[in-house]
Length: 181
Image 1: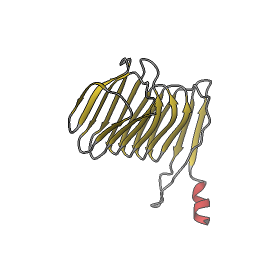
Image 2: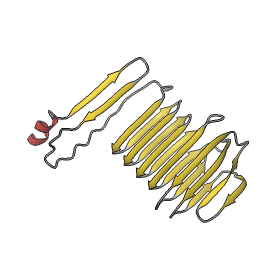
Image 3: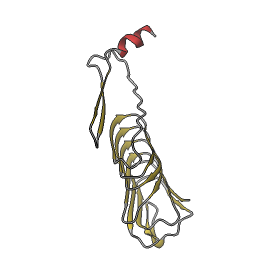
Image 4: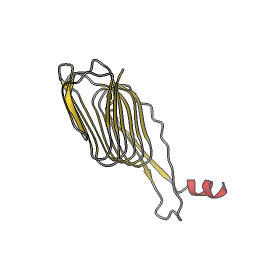
């Protein structure tokens, strides 16, 4: 405990805030002595704030946003809860768990190199839909895909009038599950 309290003094959190942006960065010490620093942030923002998160390692959770959400994470899960707006997630290793309501002409783009994608969307979503896996499975539940074209590694079609775009890809070793609610 004493070591942890002493090392906490060398860990720096840089926070900068303007009228339309909040920038938060963890500055890790140069000499870690083989220690691993795990920093968790809980940040409350206005619901209609545009969110862009770039993270190296760890879980990213975004809850109850009514605007565009962009997440780039190297390693760790990404969890999107009650998002109303465009959602873009790029992940190297980890799973994507998401509940997104797509606006008209909106876009959901999610890709992970190694991991699963689980997307919950309203049954009345209107979008061109495509999902692709290299070594996994694709399951679409409680949604009607018009003009569906499917193979062992891809599914595409149109949800509703096709006014938006949903593109999902698990490049290696992951499953894609899309459920209508």
